Each structure stands twice: as C-alpha cells, then as structure tokens.
Image 1: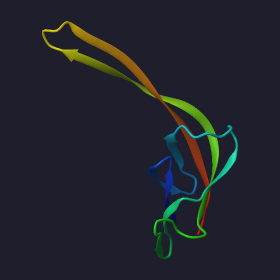
Image 2: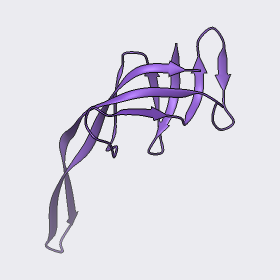
Image 3: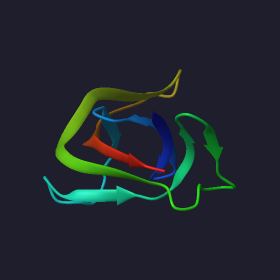
Amino acid sequence: MYAVVEVNGKQYRAEKGAVLKVDRFDAEQGAAVSLDKVLLVSGDSVKVGAPYVAGAAVKVTVQEEVKGDKIIVFKYKPKKDYRRTQGHRQLYTLLKVEDIQA
C-alpha cells in the first residue's frame, strides 16, 4: 500500500516504513504529524482525489533536519570583468512514514 502526498507544494510517494526527504518542514524533532493532503491511495483498489482523497491521511514522525549538498552558483559575463560566486545548501526534513489511513 502506498500514497501520494503533497508537502510544501511538492508530491512524494509514501510507503509504510519509508523515510521521506522533504523541503524544510516546520515541526519539532520527534513530533507526530498527520499529512492530510493525500492525492492518491493505492492498495487493493486505487482511490484518486479531486484534488484530495476525502478522509485519507498519512501519519509521519519528524526524524531530523539535514542539510543537502552544497551547490555553487557562478555568474559570469564575458569581457565585462563580472564574476560572482555564491554557495547554497538546502535544508531538508526527514519524515518517517508510520501509517497510511485510507
């Protein structure tokens, strides 16, 4: 059984026991959270929402906040002596899927 959930405007496939790496989620570490923006639930039959499945929820536990890999943003314009370097590390939250309620 799996579900497709929407978190911060992005869609993730959630299965029981899986760990989702989502963009920074505003919750305490160890907190139990219910995600009720469920777009699809698949088990014995498939339920597709319009836009969300009524009564469906995914129970998750916040594990920790982590930083992603560093990316380098480099801007350059030829013959103009213009160079700018900037780094970025995205913050992510790890969510462990405990249960899917259809």
